[in-house]
Image (tube, rainbow, N blue to C red):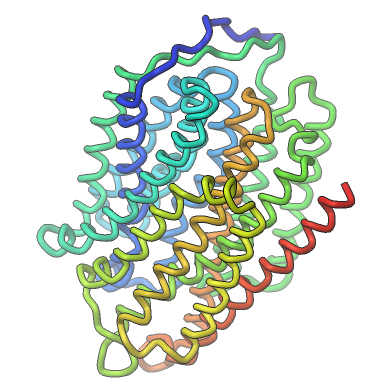
Length: 468
């Protein structure tokens, strides 16, 4: 059995190093979100449908769901900095490949490689928690999360001008150049965090089974809700595969001397409550994130607005700002007012906003305001859940705990995007191929129901927590 190398205690760092880590997160957030406002443009230039456009957006999330837990566990064991630098090499390769892509398959491959960026968040949280005093670590994690979300603002704002002034290829190339530069800076400024001493090696069977479970689930989700869909028998077979992989993973973890995920940690109320609520909140938000730019891009001779990529980016900017602000204050709000208050307030805001959009979507400002309110509600809720759950686990489990919550967030957003895309495809006009106005109304209604469902989940988890 292998034994990790023992290093001296971690060096306390200044905010210059945290700033470099935050700028890297900003660049990663930019690369992740340039696709959102440009989806209508990519669909036109590549000749793909709404469902295939959703696949372009979700390719990052599919890889991220499989990579994040592995990255978090390796970071816990061997050091966050070491794993982060190697992971950024994969992301950079994906960004450059997307920047050179001549067609949809190559673009999808680039997006798949870029999906490794999802693992950067738990690795950053490892570094922040190890190198900052306890009182400052939550602030540092909030800063990294806010800058990652803020990168979404930058990507949303710059995607259109870059695509229209040069080409859509540069939307991927420019953020990738920044990521390469910032990775070199982090490697120079950030001290190495010591590996965790262990007489056991990595639980590779557990790694393989969990990654396989998440990958099968995400691929099944994308295929089942795509343009052509899947027959019931194939969906049933995929469900059996996912269930078998998940069951095998649990069996392996129960017997492993040093499991990838300590099931006792996962069974803590703070962890599984956070996972349940995160997936519900982000599913509703994923639907909104897909529906709003699609509606803005529908030709303006009907019910749409005919907005180009630059205009869509400007319309989505307030939502990106709201998301960044709410990400930075979510943990603080939970400590001051209580986690349950933050969650209930967010669910009410989201449900009310989506209900209003069913009929009030005839002016740009209505969509802009709705996206901002949804981003604020979802950002505050998910960040509050993440910081609360992180403080409930041991420091040595920071990477795997946060990666599981990041994956849950990814799955929820992907689920919401695919549900919204399926609704629009089902309501598409047979002549034009464009989704009907009623399809958008249905999508907003479903998003409202999902948001309201989170209130029920809050109530259920409160009762179970009280019983425990």
